[in-house]
Length: 123
Image 1: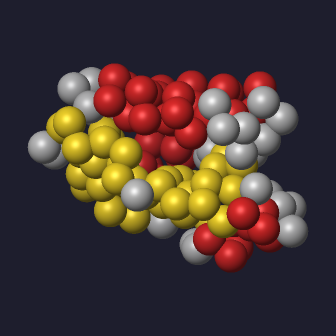
Image 2: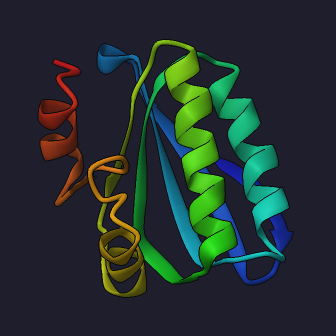
Protein backbone atom coordinates (compact mmCIF):
# COMPACT_ATOMS: atom_id res chain seq x y z
CA UNK A 1 0.00 0.00 0.00
CA UNK A 2 1.45 3.34 -0.95
CA UNK A 3 1.20 5.98 1.73
CA UNK A 4 3.16 8.89 0.36
CA UNK A 5 4.41 9.86 -3.02
CA UNK A 6 4.53 13.59 -2.41
CA UNK A 7 8.32 13.73 -2.37
CA UNK A 8 10.14 12.57 -5.48
CA UNK A 9 13.22 11.49 -3.53
CA UNK A 10 11.48 9.91 -0.54
CA UNK A 11 8.64 7.41 -0.33
CA UNK A 12 7.07 5.27 2.37
CA UNK A 13 4.74 2.34 2.02
CA UNK A 14 3.18 0.05 4.61
CA UNK A 15 1.60 -3.35 5.02
CA UNK A 16 0.08 -5.19 7.97
CA UNK A 17 0.84 -8.50 9.65
CA UNK A 18 -2.33 -8.97 11.68
CA UNK A 19 -1.14 -11.99 13.65
CA UNK A 20 1.39 -9.73 15.43
CA UNK A 21 -0.70 -6.52 15.55
CA UNK A 22 2.09 -5.16 13.38
CA UNK A 23 2.55 -2.69 10.56
CA UNK A 24 5.69 -2.81 8.46
CA UNK A 25 6.81 0.47 6.95
CA UNK A 26 9.43 0.63 4.21
CA UNK A 27 11.42 3.83 3.74
CA UNK A 28 12.96 4.53 0.36
CA UNK A 29 15.17 7.41 -0.72
CA UNK A 30 16.43 10.30 1.38
CA UNK A 31 15.03 11.11 4.82
CA UNK A 32 16.19 14.63 5.60
CA UNK A 33 14.87 18.08 6.47
CA UNK A 34 12.94 18.35 3.20
CA UNK A 35 11.23 14.95 3.44
CA UNK A 36 10.78 14.63 7.23
CA UNK A 37 7.40 16.46 7.26
CA UNK A 38 5.94 13.99 4.74
CA UNK A 39 7.39 11.09 6.74
CA UNK A 40 5.88 12.39 9.98
CA UNK A 41 2.52 12.88 8.28
CA UNK A 42 2.59 9.31 6.96
CA UNK A 43 3.61 7.93 10.34
CA UNK A 44 0.81 9.76 12.18
CA UNK A 45 -1.64 7.67 10.16
CA UNK A 46 0.16 4.47 11.18
CA UNK A 47 0.50 5.52 14.83
CA UNK A 48 -3.22 6.30 15.04
CA UNK A 49 -3.91 2.64 14.26
CA UNK A 50 -2.20 1.67 17.55
CA UNK A 51 0.01 -1.12 16.27
CA UNK A 52 3.60 -2.26 16.65
CA UNK A 53 5.77 -0.99 13.80
CA UNK A 54 8.79 -2.45 12.07
CA UNK A 55 10.50 0.08 9.86
CA UNK A 56 12.52 -1.36 6.98
CA UNK A 57 15.30 1.11 6.17
CA UNK A 58 17.39 -0.98 3.76
CA UNK A 59 16.29 1.19 0.80
CA UNK A 60 17.12 4.42 2.61
CA UNK A 61 19.90 6.07 0.60
CA UNK A 62 20.54 9.00 2.92
CA UNK A 63 19.48 10.24 6.35
CA UNK A 64 20.47 13.35 8.29
CA UNK A 65 19.92 14.43 11.88
CA UNK A 66 16.41 15.69 11.06
CA UNK A 67 15.52 12.26 9.68
CA UNK A 68 16.90 10.50 12.75
CA UNK A 69 14.97 12.93 14.99
CA UNK A 70 11.80 12.13 13.02
CA UNK A 71 12.32 8.40 13.57
CA UNK A 72 12.93 8.96 17.31
CA UNK A 73 9.81 11.12 17.52
CA UNK A 74 7.87 8.35 15.77
CA UNK A 75 9.27 5.78 18.20
CA UNK A 76 8.21 7.87 21.18
CA UNK A 77 4.70 8.31 19.78
CA UNK A 78 4.37 4.57 19.11
CA UNK A 79 5.57 3.73 22.62
CA UNK A 80 3.06 6.23 24.06
CA UNK A 81 0.33 3.95 22.64
CA UNK A 82 1.86 0.94 24.41
CA UNK A 83 3.44 -0.49 21.27
CA UNK A 84 6.98 -0.96 19.97
CA UNK A 85 9.15 0.17 17.06
CA UNK A 86 12.03 -1.81 15.57
CA UNK A 87 14.23 -1.12 12.57
CA UNK A 88 15.43 -3.65 10.02
CA UNK A 89 18.05 -3.31 7.32
CA UNK A 90 20.17 -0.66 9.06
CA UNK A 91 23.30 0.13 7.09
CA UNK A 92 25.79 2.81 6.19
CA UNK A 93 25.19 6.31 7.44
CA UNK A 94 22.21 5.41 9.64
CA UNK A 95 24.23 2.76 11.49
CA UNK A 96 27.08 5.23 11.91
CA UNK A 97 24.76 7.97 13.24
CA UNK A 98 23.12 5.57 15.70
CA UNK A 99 26.54 4.49 16.97
CA UNK A 100 28.11 7.96 17.18
CA UNK A 101 25.10 9.46 18.96
CA UNK A 102 24.87 6.41 21.22
CA UNK A 103 21.19 5.86 20.51
CA UNK A 104 21.65 2.41 19.00
CA UNK A 105 20.10 0.94 22.16
CA UNK A 106 17.09 3.25 21.84
CA UNK A 107 16.50 2.51 18.14
CA UNK A 108 16.99 -1.23 17.96
CA UNK A 109 18.11 -2.60 14.60
CA UNK A 110 17.53 -6.17 13.44
CA UNK A 111 18.66 -8.04 10.35
CA UNK A 112 15.16 -8.97 9.16
CA UNK A 113 11.48 -8.84 10.10
CA UNK A 114 11.49 -12.28 11.76
CA UNK A 115 14.38 -11.26 14.05
CA UNK A 116 12.60 -7.99 14.84
CA UNK A 117 9.39 -9.82 15.78
CA UNK A 118 11.36 -12.13 18.07
CA UNK A 119 13.60 -9.37 19.48
CA UNK A 120 10.68 -7.09 20.25
CA UNK A 121 8.82 -10.08 21.72
CA UNK A 122 5.81 -9.66 19.47
CA UNK A 123 5.19 -13.41 19.19
